[in-house]
Length: 424
Ligand code: ARG
Image: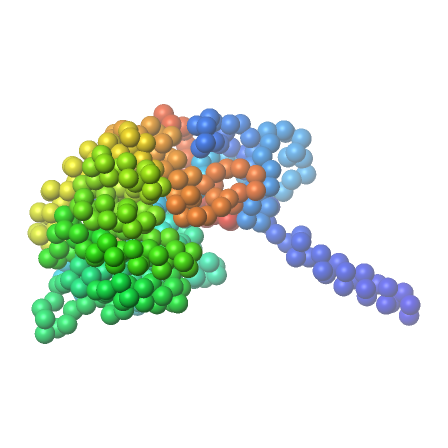
């Protein structure tokens, strides 16, 4: 009888150990991996337990008796890529007036597909900047809970905009009362603070607002500042007091300057930035997220895809200057992140922008840093963006050296996110 109790306790004790043993373990054995800090290709096998990189070593002996060894011959491993500017919610084929027929539910279902395509293209973390009905919060949490496959998401909820601004819906005439979410259309500092509070309440990680008009919206001018400095300061102060970062959409110089002065964390697009504003951005620690691929897509595919003629007309004035200013800002040492505006073009094509960044003045390493260590810094996330012990096991594999040919990043053949393999 005594023995029975002893065995029973031993049995329960062993049961307690099960969770410790259960975690998944992998060893990735590539040709090399990229140290994104130094730009060196390093020989080493990556040991993963659960969602973390627990060791890196090229000692053969350590592979003895290991299960789950993944041989990745010919692969170079790179940290999971990040995109600071995506719109996963919605069917990106619907432009102009077609877009108002899309229900939030349908937009969210497209988001499921878009999230998967983004992850399989090697983007393991993205920042979703602007979505209706908090569909982005649901998508983020469904991914986090393992219901669907997608990148780790940081989300803004509805974009804050002035009445009739780039983040409002200006397609319908007055009697239809076309508008975005009521709470996010704000016209005073106090409304702005309230909108930040509402977005936070319903699960947003960050705040996005429109500091100028835009290309894709009806009846807005990319050069015109939207929101007063006072309103922008209220948004930033309120968001920062809750530990939320702020992303400001801004093409025109006046809006860019005001947003930098208000203390935003990133300027999205930054198309008409000038040298003195770049200096202000550097002083203020403001990141620039310049989507310099999308212009070619809009001008090449726009007519076919039903993009409004007004938008095409505006794009003709924005794209080239934005690229020249990207080159100028980068050469001056501005803090740059990789942000694409995927959702105008197909999700999963994000990496096409790397080539543009290199053609417009970045070294391949700088372009990769923009999509790894710079984004993680802007996002305020620790332990991602590098292949390093203690970091999250977000690792992608490509064939060949991306420093010799940046377009290699367009063909990702291995994807691991948080220690789980999604593509091999
Ligand atoms: N969402 C942006 C807007 O509508 C897209 C701008 C695209 N053009 C560009 N050159 N980056 O304003």
